Length: 450
Ligand SMILES: NC(=O)C1=CN([C@@H]2O[C@H](COP(=O)(O)OP(=O)(O)OC[C@H]3O[C@@H](n4cnc5c(N)ncnc54)[C@H](O)[C@@H]3O)[C@@H](O)[C@H]2O)C=CC1
Ligand SMILES: O=C(O)CCC(=O)C(=O)O
Image 1 (cartoon, rainbow, N blue to C red):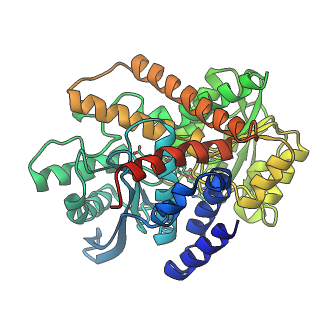
Image 2 (cartoon, rainbow, N blue to C red; image 1 turned 180 degrees about the vertical axis):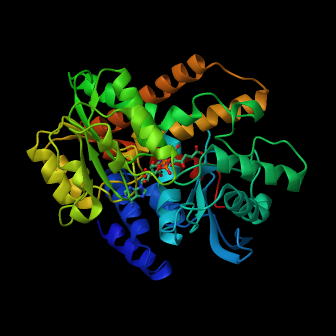
């Protein structure tokens, strides 16, 4: 274990104050300890030292003009982490909290997630500390164009293929794509999450939330449980959360919560998804407005959350789906879930559980599916979009959905089998990290010191 300590110490010196990044690295290093012990060639080839250092990090100024004519400046990022398995691939996040640590943790996670899909994808992540909230459509467009004015020179259909993440949906992908096309004068499959008529794949929008529920289904079946009738807590009210709720309802489960940065909505009878969608589509509406049409629901504002906790995890339920953001489920929340009889936590978001929360869940034998496995349906469907772009084809919704189910099943099996191989049956965190790591590490060795 000294190599974990040594690696973390070196990382803290070379990349100071990147707490989320350290958290992601430490989790992977702890999980892969069993293979490092028996495999000297990973040490010989300095695989860990190379893996924790991105191949390339791009940081740039994004200057744009707001509706009042005022020039605004944001910080843009693209971290191209690892290309051992294929072109860099991963989303862009536009959120005021974005910084180098967050983009690096997301990029690092993406490397192993993409490897776990079994597809030919490297790992990257990008974004900006831009807050889309309250911005007009014109401001969003000008920001996206300014961001692409720098990014375009680093990306390409076989080099680096960005997509969406928090704050970046199909509208933003449209503005980014339009500017890319203008700058390079080519219609390339350079971004995924595009609209269907100009190169998008059916199902990409739904894929992360649906994929997460498919993985939950495989995990429950493997443990002699069923999704049908299960009461589910879901956090978030964005792309991943709402599509997870949609699929859960379709498969007979009962999602009873959703949340956003203002607070948590709890409806014991089951969330009325079309009402939530209508509210989220109105810039001035709040999830609290749900109560005007559903008087037996409850809204817990953020300032009434438990200390060190998130109200969304404090209701009785069988399953929990954190689908909002990193570190949104603490040890306090994990204890509440355990005390309320929760049987499984399936991560739709990236790194939503803190390290202490995961320890609590594993100790209490709660089934735990890490984001690397559970939310990989999004990036996997992005690869299906790339395949359609490259072959100039359009597949039907059903065809993409069938492929997604197969990919999610394979991801579950790879993580499950690796966990069993290393005598930790059912530990999908360990299994996902080991299965992802092995593919990347072996490819790096085969490709020499680069
Ligand atoms: N969109 C995709 O295909 C994929 C997304 N993810 C992850 O899923 C999570 C959600 O992403 P999307 O749904 O795409 O984004 P989104 O922008 O559509 O929605 C984000 C949701 O999280 C909530 N949120 C953000 N910060 C919050 C905070 N501090 N407290 C409470 N709620 C907060 C927002 O209110 C919103 O409801 C992120 O962790 C993202 O990295 C992972 C894989 C793929
Ligand atoms: O679709 C993609 O390329 C990226 C999805 C993503 O950002 C993620 O998996 O976290």
